[in-house]
Length: 587
Image (cartoon, rainbow, N blue to C red):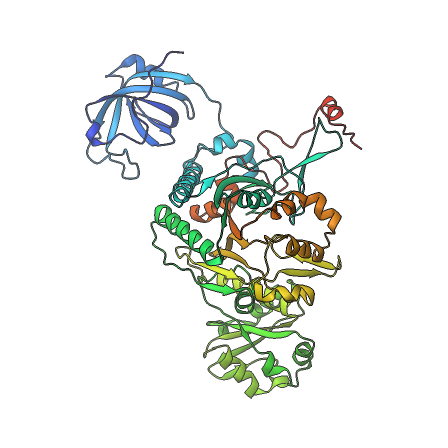
């Protein structure tokens, strides 16, 4: 079908174009018939323009315009005119002008869409995902993908300016244990053998350091076969970075420069560097999370030393077993009713702890059920340590170190939401450092890596690998933005002997290590430089910058929470012939 190609986009025309003959192409957004004159808003990804079809101007074109319905694809020509006084639309960038139509081609008709193509949409997400091509026509989704595009461009410019080389690493790689379940791909030409989709390019980027490419980056797809949630997908995008002859500060400085660029160019905000740093221990004991949201206060206090010899057996016995008694102050919380407090106690119990103790500091003095066990003076001292003032409430948890603080961390976030303490217009960036090298799995009776098997211990803690590995700290660091981990990395092990020792602690014996990582251990024998790196979760950052609640809203074609693409119905069954070629038989 022949039609006039566009001369301008639907977001481009302004008063300076008045009098010009133009052609627009796009979708019919709205149609209004007012006393014979038809008004059409035509839309593309750049914006909307109002087109007027007047029978007195062109009767045949006006007659054709009567056929138009929403989402018809059209090419329309006409003359740009100033809108009559009082009819300007300040909400549209093109709101000063109209196009008086003198040509129209209907390129494609459209059936009624399953949901309206509107900015604010109240419909089931599954329906949006099934008809994703319609959902992506909506301006908010287009803005999200344009934001993501801008992040790609900023990233590439920034790293190019700092002498990084962009290298693509393989999508079909060797299956290696990196903390999550691999996606496996059977090899047709090597029966019984499998590729894995990369959870990250970790081994490849370390090999690139051995190869002498001292500054590498890549915007890369990664894959993990794990349970999904609002900020997690089976396939996700990382900004992957590795550097040679560096320490933690060198890598963190590069990262902070990129974040400054993102914040300035995307949000128009100047951020100050260097970012604050919290140790893992400080983060857990202060905020109950290794990714604390520091846009609000509610910092914890440790009451263990005060209550260890008290008459309150629940507190004292827990402290003697190595547990903690800790809590925080809720501003104005003394006004909470009995029902509100009962609700808070039940919420806390639902997190898996025995209960919640609390002290109200009122005009009349202390109100608490634990006064009869601790005494008024000790209760007052607890309030003083917690920084509570008259009218405040102190919440207290007693449990094992990890359980007590992580429970308090969830409770802290819950109270911040209830008290509206979180300012969505505020941005907070900080580092969490000095993570433990290992957790110990009682179930598996072995150490598990807190980050990944290639993370180096702090030099002063290396001897602990031979005595008490759980006390060894890693040269690892996470970047946290508004309570979300957006990047994580470490200084890597580059010595074969140390790497073998860490593998051993992780239960990876010499034969398994050679089978799975022999290529890397061999590479280390030929002059591996000191190196380290970091990986950003690009999807999560885009979600935060866009101000949406799910990474599905910043990914063009995401999967549902059950790992299904509703639009093209995958995963799907495959033909028996394909399975036979791969030597696969289904049970």
